Image 1 (cartoon, rainbow, N blue to C red):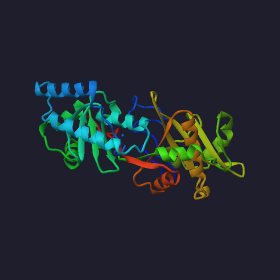
Image 2: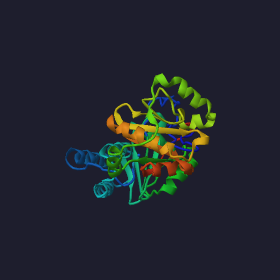
Image 3: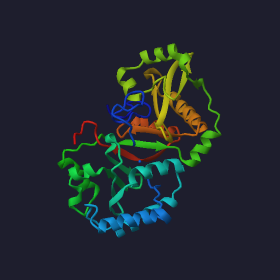
Image 4: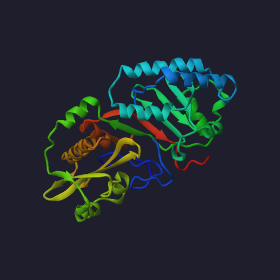
Length: 325
C-alpha cells in the first residue's frame, strides 16, 4: 500500500498502517520546508556542545566536525525565523523528527542526523523543503548498514546511492500540505456554503451506499472511514457524493491527517474543495492542525490542495515496509 489518492484528495495512509489509521507494525512518526527551528541557546546549546565533546572523546563512531555542524544548525535556525509561514505546532513537530538526534553531516543543501529513538517503520526518513534543502534521519543500525560512518562528504545523491548499494528501498515520497497562518485565518472566518455536514454513526446506511458506489482502489487509497475521528460529507439531491475523514496523526501531537474521496460522476463540481475546507475548519476548532498528503504524481490531488487553500510544505519519504534490515 502506498499513500496517495488517485483522483481527488489526500493520500493519507502511513506506510505500514491500516485503513483506520492505526499501525500494523507499531506507532509511526512521520517533516517543512524552510521553517525548521533548532534551539541552540541555553541548555540546548550545552547539550549540543556535550555531543561535540563526546564525539571528540571517541564515544561516537561519527567521523565529522561538530563545530562546523553547530554553525550550520544556527544558520538553519536563522533561516527559519525569517519565514514564519506555518504554525509552531507544525514546525516544531518536523524539527523534532529530523533534528532531534546527533547531526552527523550538514551543509547548505543536505543534513543527516542519527537518532536511536526512531520507530521501526520510520527508521529512515527524508524531507525535501520547498527551498530545495534535503534532510535525512536514520537509526544507528541503519547508519551502520548503509556505511554512513565511512565518509565525511555527503550529498543527497551519495546518500541515496549508499541506500541503494545496501539494498535499502524508500517507500516513495508524498507531498505534505498545510494551511499557512494567513490562509488559516481566512478559513476560520469563512461561511462555507453547500449541502455539507458532519457525518456520524447514524449515517451508516448513507455511508454504505457511498462506499458501494466507489471502486475498491479508490476506497483503499483514500482511506475514508465513518469511524474516524472526524468525518464530513457533501450531498447532491440527498445523496452523499463526497466524503472526507481525519484521524490524529499521533496520540500526543495536535495534527490531524486528512483523506477525501469524490464519486466519479460528481467530480469537478467543487464538492471536494468544500468538504476539505469544512473538515479542516472543524479540526482547527478542536485545536488540531489539518494535514493533507498525496503522491507526487497525483496531479488532481495537488490541484485540489491548492484549490482548498493549502500550501506545499515539502516532500516527505520513509523507508519502505518491504525493506529488510
